Amino acid sequence: MSGHSKWHNIQKTKGAQDAKRAAAFTKIAKEMYVAVKEGGGSTDPNYNSRLATVITKAKAANMPNDNIKRVLDKAASAGAGDSYDSITYEGYGPGGVAIIVEAMTDNRNRTAGSVRHHFDKFGGNMGASGCVSWSFDKKGVLVIDNEDGDYDEDTVMMDAMDAGADDFEPEEDCFTIYTAPDDFNAVADALTAKGYTFASAQLEMVPQNYQKLEKEEDKTNMEKMLDLFEDDDDVQNVWHNWDRD
Image (tube, rainbow, N blue to C red; front, top):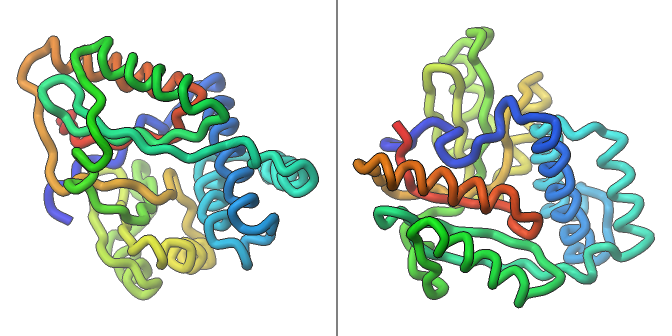
């Protein structure tokens, strides 16, 4: 997939501080609640594909197995996902950067107001549904860290393709593997069975093209806007087409 920047161009997850890790675990737990709810109450990932996807994401984020079990037990017993709605917002950041915000909320008015505020505060604007999503593709994205050079590129590529991946992108310090959304769990399971671990593993909205920001002010405001979204408890994921390189 030509033109795709480093995996952390989209989200800054690697080397997260303890506080941010705890916040990430809370958001993943919320996704598990909703996955169990939408899966008819099933906490078995073999029969709940959305839950399987979230568990893969949780493990890549180093969420302890005990935490995962506690969340699933709570979801099964209390219907914890009943109060959450999934909502997607779209808009533009500084310099016209395309942004997609995925949220889970128990109060749509509160979340819509907060997301609009985040867009407006640093020179962006929230748009209508569909205004930027046409320029993104939904894909499974698996990232294998190779900062220490432990993996051979050709071997990882062959293993990924044998597992059913659509594309493979080697970079200086990692390998990024792309799958069709419906193939994500099978590919992740096959690579895990071969002994691979993931630095990041989730379904993402991948931009078809990236946009550079020339003005330092726009770069600063874009960083601040992304930080606001990241710190918002209702926001699960933010996808954008800003090329930081």
